[in-house]
Image (tube, rainbow, N blue to C red):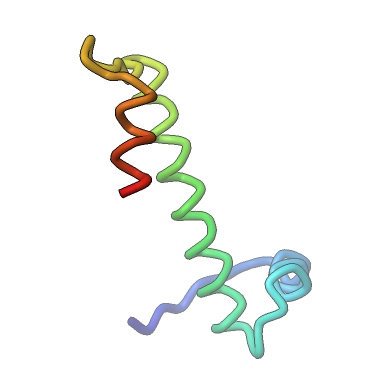
Length: 70
């Protein structure tokens, strides 16, 4: 998708520095992709904080070890 955006030069320079992109487009793609990944992790963490994982009563670490060793 082609996009026109007005961004501060110092922000673009900093993004290029940290992403080591080949050009502005590559740098922005890397930065935005990384931002989306972090946002997903934050959202998942919030969800887990509200509703933590619970193991079933039949869960047994020894059973899992035996399964993994097969």
